[in-house]
Structures are given as structure tokens and as C-alpha cells.
Figure 1 (cartoon, rainbow, N blue to C red):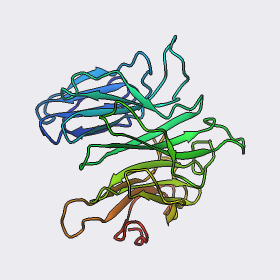
Figure 2 (tube, one colour; figure 1 turned 90 degrees about the vertical axis):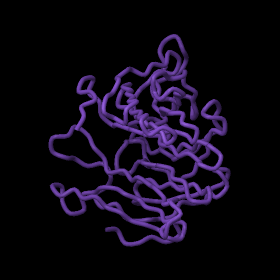
Figure 3 (spheres, helix red, strand yellow; figure 1 turned 135 degrees about the horizontal axis):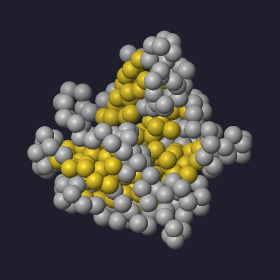
Figure 4 (cartoon, rainbow, N blue to C red; figure 1 turned 30 degrees about the vertical axis):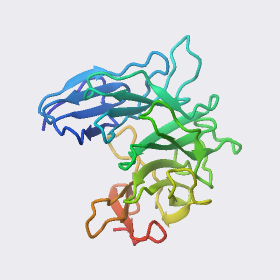
Length: 293
């Protein structure tokens, strides 16, 4: 075990190895911690990610493209005098030198004061397009029936310089409380032939959607995957906050299970002192799903 940092309360950690140079690793943690290693993780340099226009406010997602660039997706908090409000956009910073330095951020999702939260990404290995999915809140924390949450999608075809207008990919909305009935946890995954798969949690349990044309069109309505007993927002003794939101991935190895989609999550269906990790899979592009194990 190698200690990277134990100050500044780092949590919600994301980490990625450069596929072009596996000695290069970059990582991020709330709120604005960023780290890099040039020796396969034996030693690390810690820094603070700064964005003087968009601000940096957590939910880090570190990933690499096919040419070896690192990207840091995060939430925003625009500092005065720049216009904007707390977490009002999804921001992308880029590093072309192994995480040593990061470019000024570009962004997607800005929609007035609506909150843009919990983004994650996938990279199309065929054309280097970047895909992002996340949750939009009309008014974060609001219990008003008129306020809702939805899942959005955006993509960049030029290495994160520009982003497509956000596209809604969830038919069923959630509430804005940031709990079990809020739609959250959308993580995109690439299929072997450029398919984009994603699943998220909400009042209906875990649901799924997909695009077969680079995100231009999606199923008109998400499909049900499995129930989420007890919901994704639960308590663990000793932790201030946690969740069991799903992660989606797909086998693109070229092996016998190529194309199989997997969704992984945690819940407390067996009791509040017996939190379990679950896995479910689809072998037909998300049309049908196995029983959870």
C-alpha cells in the first residue's frame, strides 16, 4: 500500500492508467485534489486543480483517450467576477503531459442555475470521441413536485474542446432531493461496435438506455433492469455519506464474452447491517438481463 495523501480530506477518488504509457497514472479526489505518477504508482506528486473561470467543485472523473491525454471531469463553482452559480455545468480539463499540468476547463450542460451533477465518461476507441452522462436537477434539494431530475448526455469530437448540446436520455424523471427517487448514477460504457450503454438508479430501480449511432439517438424510453431494494441512498455506520449507485461496463476484449454488458451496485436488501455487492449481466445488448448475483 502506497500512501498518496491524507490531508485535504480526499474522497470520491478516481484513477486512470495511460494506455500509451502504463508508467503514467493520474488520479483525482474531492474537492480539487489531483495526483500523478510517472513510475507506475510507486511515487506520487500531489497538486490542486485550479480553474479561474469555471471553478472546481468535486465529483472527479479521470480518464484517458487513445492518444494518451488525460482528462479530469468535475463540477463547477465559478469564482467572482465570472458569471454562473454553484455546480451549474460539467467541466473538462485536459493534460497532455501525464497529469503534470492541466488546461483551462471547457464545459457542457450550462442551463441557467440548474444543477449539473455526478458525471461520468467513456471514450470511443475507434474515433476518440468522448461521451459524458450526468444528472440535471431543476433545483437541488427541492421537494417541490414541480422540480425534477433527468439524465443528460453530451459528447466531444475534438478532444474536449467543444461539446454537443446536452440531450435528455431519460424518459422518466426523478425528484430533486438527491436520494432514492432521484435519477442518478449514469455511467456510459462502450460496446464492441461503438454502442453506448448506460444505466442509472431511481424510483423504478435500475434502468438502462443505449445508442447505436454515437449518441445521436437513444431508445425513446429506458428499459427496466432490476429492482433496487432499499434504494441507493443508505447509511453505513461510521460513514458520513455513501451510496450504492450502479456502474456499467461492457466486455470489448474480443474473447468469448465480448458484448456482454455488466452492471454492478450495492444495496441493503438483506438488512441495514448487511450491505451487499451485486452484479447483473445482459448478453443481448441490454434487451434482457440475468438474475442478480
